[in-house]
Length: 270
Length: 248
Ligand SMILES: Nc1ncnc2c1ncn2[C@@H]1O[C@H](COP(=O)(O)OP(=O)(O)OP(=O)(O)O)[C@@H](O)[C@H]1O
Ligand SMILES: [Mg+2]
Image (cartoon, rainbow over all chains, first blue to last red; front, side):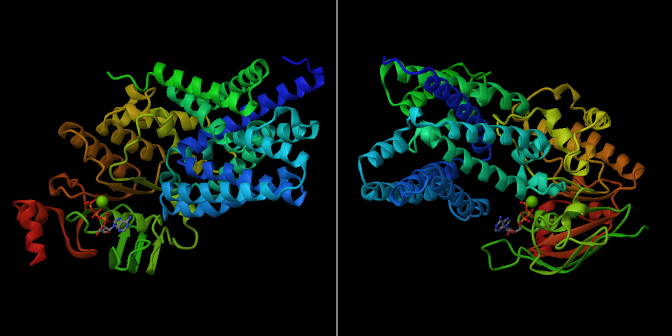
């Protein structure tokens, strides 16, 4: 283990916790509203976007944001009307965005860019700046705020969009709000976990919480706690073993998910 | 009879991606306080008709007015007062909702944005659960209840909504004979007490509520006959015979 300045460690720890919270909060909706395929495409689009940012020398965060929200708003209406099956969407978009991403990286100039490129792929917690931290903090606050304010609507939307509509709740706004927030969350967490793995951070903690808990309010508390712990443990693991931080986080979260499946009362018979 | 609550004029509904309308040329007027049953064979358009009334399906021709509001313009306000129990609505075993959450959600549309459920809302939900006899399931996850139990919860949800117009799509299909009779009678009582307007879809002629004023018979997307309940019950010995007669 290499000794690191305290400030960097603190930034990294806070970033892991915040990313863990936002990803796993949004994850509850992504998992239960059957948006997984869209989320998956979004995270790879964010990767392609960040790569393009490197190539054009604009802030990768900005271009990642643009790409992932763009995908959300293209795929949202398509999957909403069930015109294409999720499998088809994944198949096409995954290869397209990864292909584009690597082409962009290939043409990105200089050694510094290569370093950054790797961090977009695998995540690099030490490249998280103080500004990134502030943005991540604002995003966390914003998401928690919206979920509290419109809990009722999100709950109804999640239970059944059709029934919510039938009883006079305008769900379209909230459906697209979730998609948009998912896109932003993906882009903001890219630096930390990397484009190839960020989606797992969205899905795993939420899925783990959903293995145990049937009450949406409690799920929305448990999932971010699991997410934050996952990210912290992953971060420590990467320090100890000198693994890429993204990979460590995903290993931890997969382990937690596996454990929760084994222990889950939902899967037991009788 | 009261004022016209539901009015369909020359309505066609085509599902997205289809060419032929699932219901066509529907003209229908239902007045306040009426209870109307819709019967017909599978695929005759009963569900489509209900979802056209509450505007979940867009009409491709004609006009739907509910509470004198054009449903293709401003459906949301009218829907707060339309209760809907969909056909075969079964929740996945892992959904994170307790039965009591589901019933309480019936109140959400009326509450409107930024208004949290108040004490009265919880009480109304509780009373609705008591009425259909599901209060013992209140704290159980909806997905872990049996089909019939879930159906009762969905009925409680609609009662909690305190609607003015009630659309029931095979609401008793999963219920045992006793529950069917009991809940059907309770709905009839509520219907009268609250001066509801109620449309009940069924393909079982024997579960037409006795209280019902008219029976509409649908076949292949059209309303092909309108009967009064007694004559349907008397003249029909068996379902198949009835429907076969229709098709000739
Ligand atoms: N989502 C859909 N897309 C295309 N066609 C549909 C869709 N849903 C129903 N239909 C068609 O519309 C027609 C009417 O269907 P509907 O569900 O209204 O029948 P129903 O009378 O409710 O039947 P059941 O007794 O089986 O419930 C059928 O021919 C059916 O094939
Ligand atoms: Mg039907």
